[in-house]
Amino acid sequence: MIKKEQCGPLTVAAVLALTDNDYGPALGILALPGVAALALPVWLRFRVPDPARYEPRHPDTTHPKTQPSGTQRSHPATLPPAFWMYCAFTATTMIGFATFGVLSFHMVTRGAWGTARLNRHAHARHRRCHSRRILLGHLRDRCG
Image 1 (spheres, rainbow, N blue to C red):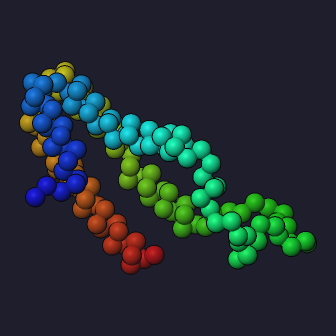
Image 2 (cartoon, rainbow, N blue to C red; image 1 turned 90 degrees about the vertical axis):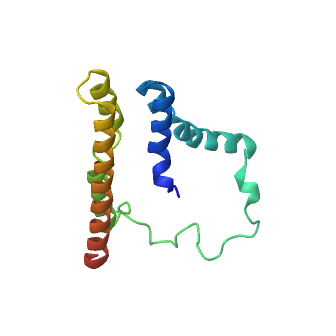
Image 3 (cartoon, helix red, strand yellow; image 1 turned 90 degrees about the horizontal axis):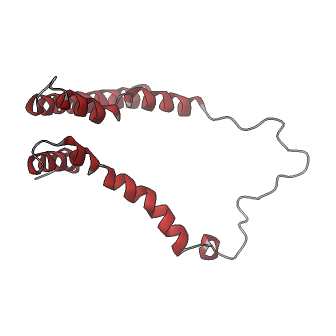
């Protein structure tokens, strides 16, 4: 059974097989989900130009929109340290994620690596990434 994580690499492999190892169309096909993700909000905006009309008409009494007099903040709200730790973790783990496709394209077109070696390298890289995510997720659960 194919897992959803395997759909992208399998699609690229299929396009590579159909186009005689041409990486242009193979990497271009990966842009389709991105284009769909960018087109969806635009389509929704045209479909529902006023989303407020779907909100309930009664006023919300649990979250007052105005603060009582004398309690205005003198400084803007800051985000908690846990948020910044998560941002640093995400940025660190995502370094180089988007550039692998560009690097692999140039390695194959210039003859530095063959397609088979590149695919083996990508598979090993994915295994390392999954192992690291499991380990870091376990540490985060333990240490907070």
